[in-house]
Structures are given as structure tokens and as C-alpha cells.
Amino acid sequence: MLRPAGSEQAPPEAGEPSGAGEPKPAPWWKKADLRRKLAIGAVAAWAVAITAVVLLRDGDDPGAPAALPAASPSASDAPLTVPQLYQALRPSVVLIKATGSGAGADTGTGVVANADGTILTAFHVVEGAKAITVAYADGTESPAEIVTSSAAQDIATLKPGKLPETLVPAVLGGGAAIGDDVVAIGNPLGLTATTTSGVVSGLERTLSRDRGGDIAGLIQFDAAVNPGSSGGPLLNDRGQVIGIVVALANPTDAGTFIGIGFAVPIGAALGAGEGDGQNPPL
Image (cartoon, rainbow, N blue to C red; front, side, top):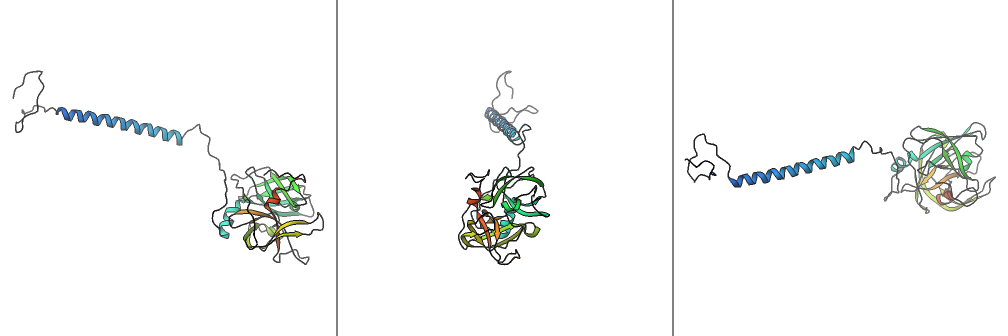
């Protein structure tokens, strides 16, 4: 079927054959639909490209500082088992070696009490020492110096010269009631990271000492401790350090545990400054 040159070709009537070899132009409504689809596709492609750029910039920015390990410990909302308490607190417990205060080296325990690396321990562990070394759970060792001390409360804080790659401060706080479950972690007789469990046996106990006067207001507990446990944390079942182990009772001269240990409550330990009523730098 012949049509005038330049005229728009109308769609063939139903049943009308198209010319042999003659291209069949798309209907006008299909052209409009194609243009609409192309426009939508272009917008979608642009959106995907912009999204990809934002994700790459946010996740792989070469100018952004690398994230450093940081511990943000908090008390558990539910009671923890002894193995769970050990796993949570082991990185916070250190072995302390003090030399120069007597024959050989004295060993004790400390607990990382702040994000700056401050270590809380018993004063008698480091009293008179000429050199102090702390060893962390990951094997890192560092010299340390006494920052604050209180002979009256038998509490001291140490500042290490070197910190481990990942520092994990313990959670401090929480009260104690008679019968509460407790866990002690320390280094008795040089046996590192020894973990024992028991209960709070009494409160407001007074410990008489040959020198330095009595210490009042102590927590009595029956989790096993021995020489070398001093300065270690006493934990409740939420993973909080409720006290610092300072002594055991034994009616003989053996110096071994018979079921009675003592810890300075954490509130008193944090208030044990240089005798001026100021808190140590925790």
C-alpha cells in the first residue's frame, strides 16, 4: 500500500498485511512507554551509583582513623556462672612482682581499674618495694610505680609504664550481702589466674594487725585465698568487683587458708587516698 512521502504511517488495519521487506515502525504509544522505561532505568542507575559511592566512602575512607580496641565493660543483667566470670575478668587481673622489700621477690595480684591502665592492689604487696613489675594475661610485662597508697586501708594504686595491646578494665561497684555468691581471682603461691568461689560469710569485720592499726568494715568470705592472692578482685555474680582481697585468718602460724578471707569493700578501696580523703586516680 503506497503512502505519500513524508506522511506519518498509520498502523495497519486489522488483517492488513504489511509490505514485503518494509520496516514496521513502533506504534506511538509503545514509543512513549519505551521513553518512560528508559527514564526510570536512568534514574535507578543513578541512585545505585550514588548509593555505592556513599557506602564505599563510609566504609573505606583512607583518611579515616583506624578503630582502636577499646573496652567498655558493664555489669551483667543476669547472674553469671563461675566459668563466665573467669572469662570476663581474666584479662583485667595482673600478676605483681615486687622486689627489694625483703628476701627475694614478693608476688601478689592486682586488677585493672580504669581505662588509663591504673591498677588497684593491696598496699602490703608493694610496700617498700624498689622495683615493681606487672604481668598481664596476654603475657605483656611492664614496670610500674606506686601512685597512691593507704596503709590504713591496705590499698594502693599502680601506674604501669606499658599497657597491653588490648586493655580491659574491670567493672567496679556493687554491694555485698551475707550469703551472696562470690568469686576470687588471684595468683596464690605463684599459681597464676587461680579462681575460687564461695559466699559472703560476714560483713563489717575488723582485722587486727601487728602494725598499721586495725582495718574495719571488711567483707568476710570463704572462697579460698592464700599468699599471693592479696590485691586480687572479689567478684559478685554480675561480674562486678565488690572488694579487694587483703588478708586471711588462720589461728596458727602456717599462713594458709582455713575458710576465712577478708576484702576491703570497693567503696572504701576507692576512697583510700594519701590520708587526705581524696580518691585515687581511677
